[in-house]
Image (cartoon, rainbow, N blue to C red; front, side, top):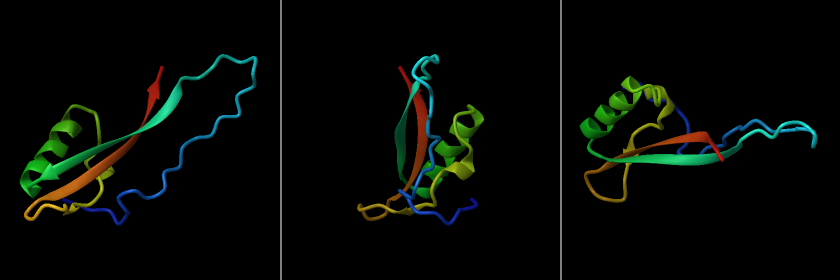
Length: 84
């Protein structure tokens, strides 16, 4: 698995809105964080399934890092989604 050098909760650049008051409102955006915790095999397998479903590219996940529990790893995906 190719890992990118970026922090777990590194800065996220979200588009800012300068929408005039009389224009149609855009859906609000909200940050959601997905965390996978388990073995390397289980995490990378789940990443592949989510990629095959078209939900998240494998390279969008953070690098695998040790979790607070011995023998476990974790990875996080941060997405911006529309909420209504």
